[in-house]
Length: 113
Image (cartoon, rainbow, N blue to C red; front, side, top):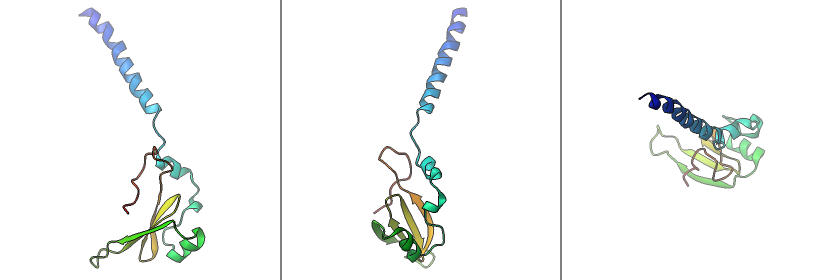
């Protein structure tokens, strides 16, 4: 019984250190990359579609509008640029989401096409 007590702490310590090393080698998160970018690089909430297109040019893709089936469900338009996707409600920016830089980056799923 006494020998078991001396063996237990090193085993527990080894398992704890293995867990810490796994956390230390974590992937780069999209959130970290998005926070590093200057705020001026993205469209601002409330800008119009024409302002966004004037500042950033034509989007790579204009996705089909979603919503609008009922009055309380506004139509949402989505424009995809190389670095971000812009979401519009009634031609005004409501959100901007950074796109993944590569397939290994952890972050939001791409917009449904």
